[in-house]
Length: 479
Ligand code: TXE
Image (cartoon, rainbow, N blue to C red):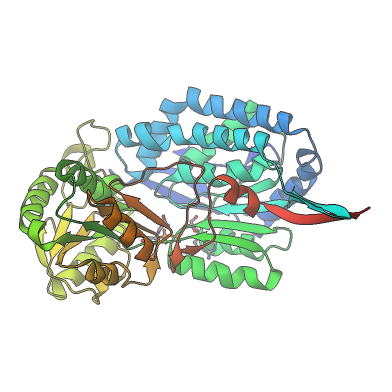
């Protein structure tokens, strides 16, 4: 049985309270690791270590921070294959996907934010009789809380900018996928990251999550996860006036006009529907197709979706691996029952998938396409976070804009058309933080990323991350 440990003050240690959680492999349903169920006592140790480390880390020359973090990025690249294996085993995603997407982004996140930190400048405002200099200073001890769908990718997306601008961090990965953050802790030691600069605490939301959001010593909370959890966190941090950002769920529309580049749209729409088993907050789960193209799209899309191989994440031709946990598997199956009871016509999929051999007890779901559901039903209003999409036809841009905007969410949208004017007109109307035209999940790390409405608060990426993880101070000089 593998044992995950907390990383506090530069050392890997067991939780003070001696409590552990089981961690299973979603593809087999077998428990393979024990995870610390940390609590306030572990957090107190971590915050004390981070406060001490902050005195130095926040004041060393930027070049020194950059050297250390780039050394860590190099180690992540050198250990990529071990990280790929752990991420796939822990999360259920195909290994090839972890190799192509998740793990390369860890080193890339670190290097992106170190290079941005080196060139970052702040503003100056000249007056006729003096000037203002706006300083952006590291805040102190900050916390990051990250989810299980892109475990180390999102963990490093938050930790890298926080560290690059001089904060010290308490990082809490999801208790459902702790393995790569644990491995990352070992690489931090090897990279020579000074003790206390990053502390990694494992455990669930009720135990260590709540302790983090309530702790007086933590000044900032950066969260990615479900909308219900985000709501709780916002309420928890309010009394201590912590700065916070929330990147939450989505129910993203994918709008397809008849004049689109069909093959590119079809191939990308299959990915945006089913990649990572539909467990990406950016997946397009409501597909709206212009009337004239609808029948052709439906038949082709359903035909191709039904052929996607659901299988062992270790096999290279597997397109969908396991969903992340037994609990999440049950949630998705329950959503499918609701869709049926709401009158949805299941065009393909609609239930659990069975995979033989070592995976026969794993948590697999068939790629599912549903037709004939109105906007205002539960299936079209709530995030399922699985390989499940609904399809519907539309006639006009105004109609599809209303459909696109008709949920409480506002994270991302895709628009497919060869008429850029149509694309831009619709993009301007859509209430979401990100709109992709003729593409999906194309990420430039300099751009602002985040959601509107119940999809979140604040933006991450590029200088938005730096502004979030620093305190702004204006210094005014009068001649
Ligand atoms: O996520 P949680 P869950 C959505 C998706 C999914 C639903 C629930 O729809 O079905 O959320 O998933 C920590 N204080 N997304 O319950 O709970 C938790 O330990 C502080 C979308 O697994 O939001 C983990 O580290 N922290 C999403 C992190 O929050 C708390 C990705 C996320 O878990 C806490 C994941 C608390 N009270 C799920 N409770 C996306 N936006 O990509 C939990 N946590």
